[in-house]
Image (cartoon, rainbow, N blue to C red; front, side, top):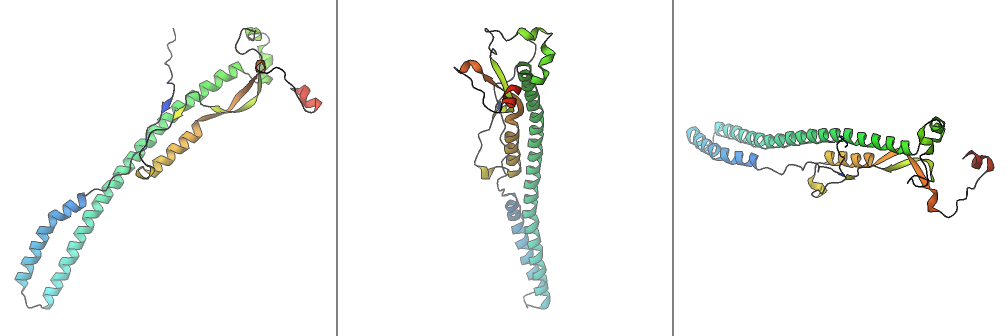
Length: 216
């Protein structure tokens, strides 16, 4: 009985965070302040007088500036809250990808070790002469008549499955780019042995310069 945990058949990636939807919090605050500001303005004009003097115009200008400042502050507070939210979600998603990256690398390392054990480098075959592996490739073995032709990229043993997401314009572009880069980088493993099964062909012909052919 093996005590090692079973690996999943595939890794389903989490969707990137969505962009915060437009919030009406700033406008709600503005609507709460608006009656108070209008009342203060009306009372101020009554106390100053209706003669249209210089003080009336000065106070009116100051009142308009104060009102505009409150509007800007209300709207700016909502924008800062949305920015803080998306920054927190970006950090969480980058932390998730970082943890998943370590898991995928472990899978790739195990895949590489298993494939090299089955298809070792020809330069290392001398090390198997005095071991039991010398007679492993019998006719009944699945690896019989398999020849290592070189190395190359192959799919990760545990495939990465892209998540089902909402439209791209609704997703955080920074996190979406990180996800695409992650899938493109770790969906394949470079430098793995590539083998040919000679039993799949009726005849095999090696062509090329004689020294190169004999060197195979």
